[in-house]
Length: 109
Image (cartoon, rainbow, N blue to C red; front, top):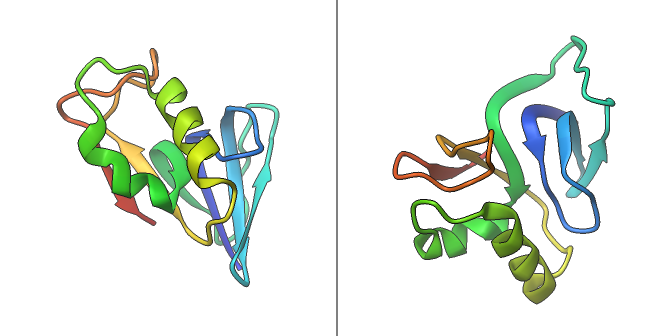
């Protein structure tokens, strides 16, 4: 079992979660909403950024600087659905405004 926390989590069939974490176990990903308050849990990893489904990595070349990320992610979720087994991290984006920036990148966790 792997527990991964981040500033934001946005996965299909889940609202945008601030300061939550995901539990990945046997190919299933479960979102845990902490109400915005992450506490230390043994073995939990923390990353600065936005956790998204792994398939978002195939779309990364479509992001342009200044793009609002959530509408694009919602469109891709509608196309690809909620089947994924891993998560990726968007880092370097403007998390205050949830926009893509020139420094942003996506990597598999």
